[in-house]
Amino acid sequence: MLNSKIADLLNEQVNKEFYSAYLYLDFANYYADAGLDGFANWYQVQAQEERDHAMMMRRYLLDNGDKVVFQAIAGPDKSFADNTAPLKAGLEHERFVTASINEIYAQAFALKDFKTMQFLDWFIKEQGEEEKNADDLIKKMELFGHDAKGLYALNQELAARVYAAPVNGPAM
Ligand code: FEO
Image 1: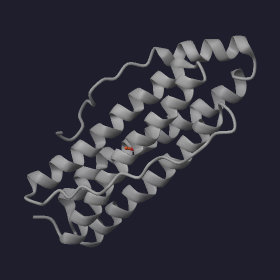
Image 2: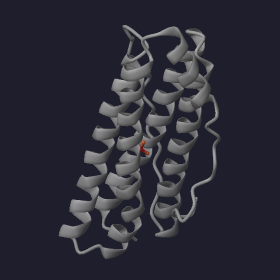
Image 3: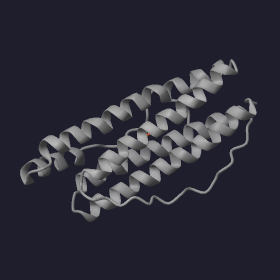
């Protein structure tokens, strides 16, 4: 069994990851409604990755003999002023998730829970990539998204994203 503080934090993180999936599906809904199916696809794939993150943490809790306790998932409540707003909200959200995972890592370090630190290493790296992806999307949108041809091309690019199960990640 894990230290109860770590188990509680990981259970909360499971909820945050499922919420992330819900939030990104909400972004996908926004873009689908706006006729930007490539952007919608990108966030739909992102939602699948978030679900994977939740499943990895669920599996880790189970494998350590800890209870998984599901909490209610909050409804996304953001409204967006323009097509760039979800991208910015996405980066802000990833920074929030990074801080949350860093906090679990810090607690694991304080408790000399080296197993959990090792488990979280994959997520630390993943957060770095997700923040970069979110930031790149904003930059591309600001560079190319303000004229119809540029937006069309960017939408096509994002339509090409395909879900792939994580490689070298923790078991789900
Ligand atoms: Fe699972 Fe985007 O953090």
